[in-house]
Image (cartoon, rainbow over all chains, first blue to last red; front, side):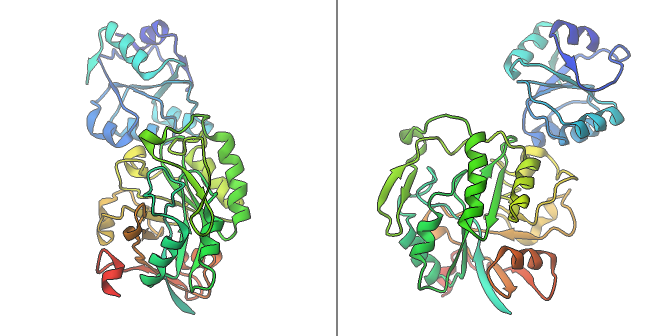
Length: 114
Length: 255
């Protein structure tokens, strides 16, 4: 499914300033708030769901070539994090929904574990 | 210059996870008999038992620094160490505002006792201290430094509440004064910390929750037991230094 459609269906807002339309289809997702687990558990091009908004999420996402990060529970990345994500081409999306709810909706949309 | 043996991470009965014997006179007795000269009292998100330990240490060759083990929004434990109780209390005001209003359930988490210098009960802290504040790691470090304290991420390589497992790699923008490795790790093998920033000293403490947990593995060569001297030792300035030695797990066995 196109990230653009996912963002619309989950009512996500974008923190970064990247073109969501141009992103290829995503078929997998991963959820964890421990970045060490993400580094070993998330697959390439997955969408990552987390409530962590620390700058390191961008470094981890870039390392794994993730497509986007959905930051849950209204956690807010700071300006430096957003700028870094823009540079790295990592789309940061935000929602007030909790991890569980975001994952449930992604599953309903057909995404599976990476 | 003098060599001081130090342990900068210690819990009292105010921390719900600490043993009931962690009262000021027992802590002081254990430290003195272990040959430790400096302790930092670092309860979870609280500072109320520091003065009691300081009073219990009067008359001994034992300096008690005012500290706290602050839990950040990311679920990272940060040692915050000050010279005076007043500085620690200022940080406490911020932490009080940023800690969720969730009450402790002593049956699940353990009691949170505020005591006097003899260990006698004064009151219980009602709010659960084993919780994350809404302070980010960066803002917590900034708060500590604004109060001229030392900020040292605790047990960085421990799965629970350690900086590395939580954040994956060391953030490039942090200005901590040192890092603490887990008490069960081999400090000479910190190469496992692959993203370890060069120039930041590694220390190790007992993170004592029980009376025989004191480690005293940090040996400071400094003029006096102050955070300014520690800072110089961490930076290797003016002949000050810090080194780790733990030939034995329990320092008392060697004394």
